[in-house]
Image (cartoon, rainbow, N blue to C red; front, side):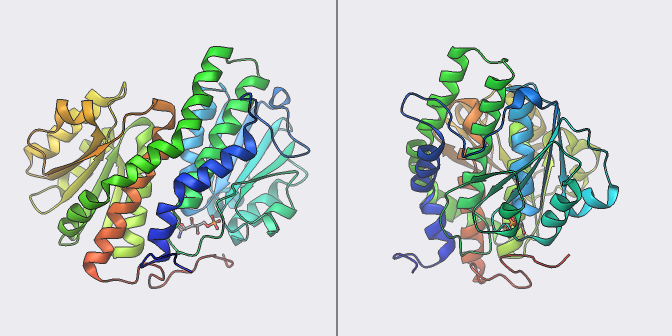
Length: 363
Ligand code: M6R
């Protein structure tokens, strides 16, 4: 049932405020304490975290790396599952291995998990399907409570994965004694605010449709982001490729001049994801480099960012202002809506893109 929407994908994008609220309800108690499912985990006994996943779930891990490093001061490795297992990485026993998978059935992720069994100190999984193989073989299962996701392009599962991973990073920070009560309370309040700012962010739909129509004319599209926004640039490019079949690449803004800027001319839309955070000025100077080469910049930022840097761009998408820590969750929305409306303009099959399956159960 598409609930009045034309596609499952648009229904699932629209559901995000509700399902994130659900996920928060499962992990945060009324007094703001974090409650993990049994048997729980104490990160005081963990020295290193290894995260493994594929596709969009892998990008969620890249965002989580920022959180675990910055908030919990914990060393983190992130790998795509198909690369991880053949490298046979050493896993000291105070390593926790964390697997992220919507379906819980992705063959490479499951094989990576099995590689870690008996080596890592504990096996954790963040899944949408609690009855899945990955969940069954984990020591601790953290369900994301996103509800069934039908669209092949992952949307609400991604933002719920991010939400649960941020909560887990906060728990790790607490267990390791590296976060004070005020900072902790600030992060919890930022988390609790997500459903309402996400509803507000869904209001960019008309603007995203107009931008999508423009993007649909392009042959190549670049997505740029720095710091916390780099994984979002990768996710925006993946979503666009998957459902519109337009060639898109996500780059760390600072990498631009190390090669990709050679692609830029007046035919290339460049989507810049840049909330007005502490890295904003650096991203803007990268953005100006592509504008000087006539690249068509679409700047996605908050009111202050657009006021400071919107001039001379091809288009802007105005996002609500949020605490820096939760911006990756919020900026999932423009990544998804730009892809969705580009695909609509091209008339491709949004829910069932060619060559793709919802769950990849072969290597
Ligand atoms: O079920 P999983 O989360 O393990 O799936 C991983 C990827 O196959 C998946 O995220 C894929 O990249 C999506 N189609 C992206 O939209």
